[in-house]
Amino acid sequence: MLSLGNTYSKEELFDFDGRVKKGLGTDEYEYICELKFDGVAISLKYENGILQKGITRGDGSKGDDVTANIKTIKSIPLKIKGSSPARSFEARGEVFMPKEVFNALNRDRERDGEALLANPRSTASGTLKMQDSRIVAERRLDCYIYTYLDDENSFENHESSLKFLANAGFNVSPTYQKCKKINQALDYIKEWDQKRDMLPVETDGIVIKVNDISQQEELGFTAKNPRWAISYKFKPKSASTLLKRITYQVGRTGAITPVAELDPVLLAGTTVKRASLHNANEIKRLDVRIGDVVNVEKGGEIIPKITGVNLSARRGDPRPITYIQNCTECNSELIRKEDEVQHYCPNFQTCPPQVLGRIEHFISRGAMDIESLGPKTIKGLLDKELIHDMSDLYLLTFDQINNLQFEEFDEPTGDTVKRSIKEKTATNIIRSIEASKQQPFKRVLFALGIRYVGKTTAEKLANHFQSMDAISQASEDEITNVYEIGERIAKSVILHLQQSENLKIISSLQNAGLKFKTEEKERKTGKLSGLTFVVSGVFANYERDEIKNIIKEHGGRVASSISSKTNYLVAGKNMGPAKKEKADSLGINILDSLSFGKLLEND
Image (cartoon, rainbow, N blue to C red; front, top):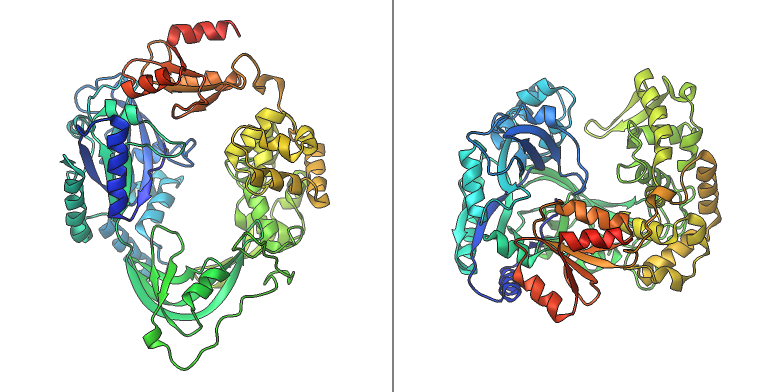
């Protein structure tokens, strides 16, 4: 489930329209405009018209199975009305908590002396993950469905699929509109920017999609976003309040982020107490000072940001802010590289937030996926000196953590409370730590937290070098020769593997039994090694994702668009003609499913 490209600018919408026109080679197209609801993206799988699974978007490729809780949402049909055009299909939408339900829930919590919930979106997200479906049902979540998908491309356009979904019993918001030209889409945006507060759910923008499905196929995707859709965000709501002081947060990579501590102010339905100031350059640009009245916006960020200072309200002559020179957590002298705006604490070995952040990253779902361990438990283990880095997790025993008591800070109340690890949780932690030893090398490499090495980069490095020893011995040129790996990543990898503390952790993890080389069954070898494929259309003998996985298993790369680096276009039915024309113009081999199968047989 890819995310959409965002824009706050009407000029960029005209640029988007221009790209669509150029990509299709015609101005014969139309858009469907839909409200962008602020909830939790969900994928619903149906077989023979019966709901089988409900999965959250997660990181786009792996989410949480929340089927039991999804079945408590009355607007999601367990069985559709009538029949579907395909035996198996997927409905995508947004689970949300209606504003009136959220407000009533907070009134009850206030009456009972409980901490108030932050906002409807995070409340909906937390509710979906609850283990007690009875509580989920009581919270009266709702869901708008906005996408239909199947392997047969059963509908010619998006509008037809929306009408099917509505007739099948799904809750499709009636607010969508077909627009012939981009100017009509702008009129739609203007209308709903004025009316959005009347809606039962929070909305922060408009989604504009090309209506024709074959034209969507022709336009295709970038690495992260569809080329046939864009999200226009409404202008962020702003408020003014007093800047009381500035604190400094230390991230897991040592990056220092200044945070403005504010007089609480209501903004876009939530009470804002803090706002990001990003870096020293931003403080200087804003010329913000303690005691200033500042403008605060929430522009799609979790932490709101300060966008300006009301100079007319400034009293006296407050001193300009002097940026800190030493880390607020460990007192190490900060460093700032010439080509970067961020200050860093270099003490990655013992600086508490860095150690905590690195371990949190190590245990996360995309990395080692160690369940039952959370930030507060990790901090408790650090405070009790049972662990000092991620490798110490593999030395923990059940007896050490069973009934372990530690203190934690309760943010809503501001109090320090005592907590203990119960027997069942301790069992799950030890079991999950042991199970993580089976994670493949690419996940271990990502889990190490090397700066600039994300999940995809780690996979490319693991596939290319096959082992940590090979990466450690590689030169900068050898690393940059890996497909789509640049100089910045190469320098960061080499620096990380030159530091003795990191080498010590890696050695301890190896001794614990983690995988630091690609196993034989995972190795990407064969005739497709080093070849780049684009897969498009619908296939009789394969699902599209199945073909992509087969290519990867045999060492090939899958790209989203055709370029001079493409070796093969695997073409199915309903592929856009523009892709074929581009492949022909570049002399790229075009394979149907039969010739693709023969290519594999020759491997």
